[in-house]
Image (cartoon, rainbow, N blue to C red; front, side, top):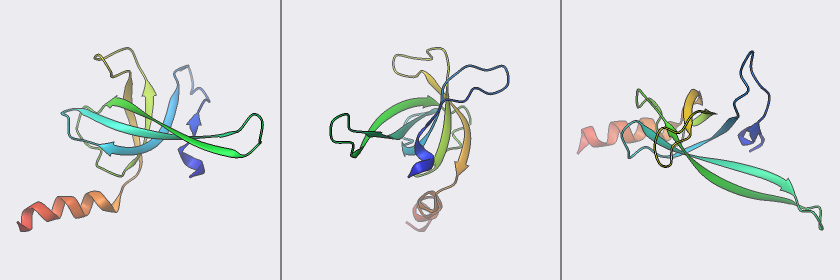
Length: 106
């Protein structure tokens, strides 16, 4: 999707990188794994090639759910792998609502 590319525009007074991607894991406490899809033209063949990269981001309130589209912002290192923090949840996933209701029925 086009809205899941990296955003390089600095906000007012901020120069930190921001990226938009999908949450692929919320199994850790206060940590989410966000997969960002990059689209780039191949240098020789000029065809659009998709590549993706996973980023570990800090989620203080554990508010993000699996499948959500989120914006993450670069921060100082929080742990061995975490260098990003959850900025905002752009779009909620319908997947997360199904998962929340499923364990109650079991």
